[in-house]
Each structure stands twice: as C-alpha cells, then as structure tokens.
Length: 143
Image 1 (cartoon, one colour):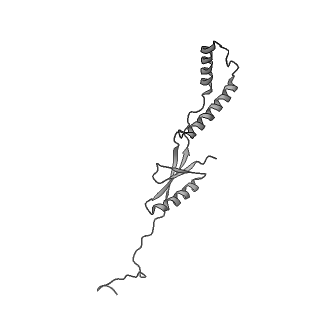
Image 2: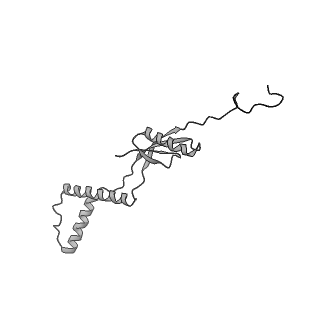
Image 3: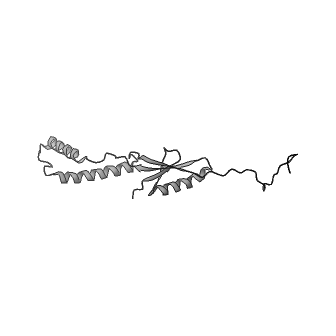
C-alpha cells in the first residue's frame, strides 16, 4: 500500500513512508528527540511519485519486431494480427517489467514532495532562579 507522507528536519531531505500526515509528524517528533534540542521543527510533506515513463512502449516494440523480421526473412505479415488490445497487453507487460527493473537496480526517479506543513517542536523550558533553589543570594542585598 502506498503511504504518501514523509517527514524532514530541513524541508529538503524527506524520509519515511506514513499513511497520514499525523503519523509522519509523530514519527518526526520522536526522531527529533535524538538530536537534543538542535531540531526546532518537523516538516511533513505529501509524496508525489515521479512518472518513470515506463508505459506506452508496446507500439514501438511491435514496430521494431516487424521491421527486424522483414529485414531478416522478408515476411511483411509478421504480427499483423496484433490489434490494439494485444498491443495494450504487451504495453502493460513491458511497463511492469521496466518498473521492476528500475526498482531492482535503484534507478527509479526520485519522488517530489509537496504540501509541506511545519510542526514546531515544544521548546525546553529555561531554568531561572526561584526561592527553592539551593544557591541563594549572598552579600549586603540578601535578606
């Protein structure tokens, strides 16, 4: 199942795959705890897959096969029965093979990210002097 959301600390490098924006924000906030206050916000974006252009190759493959057969044997009738439905089936099979090949060799195009939302992290409270502190005032002004 495609999980369209990811988180980032710099609005550029997104990671993770989450079903909802909220899941991504929580995961980012949990990860941010490891950085001890360095990270000020978590950014959540929607992943938009980039089309790998793996479709619509069936016609070209059939044309190439016909041309090669004609050159090799002179048979101009080769694949004459390949109607639009048969070519569409070939096209789907080629697309599937190309997408698998891209994944297997880590060649798929990078996803784009849009609809970025900012989720500020809670700030750590600064510790200031109070009457319960162990160290007190010394000197002529102390009472």
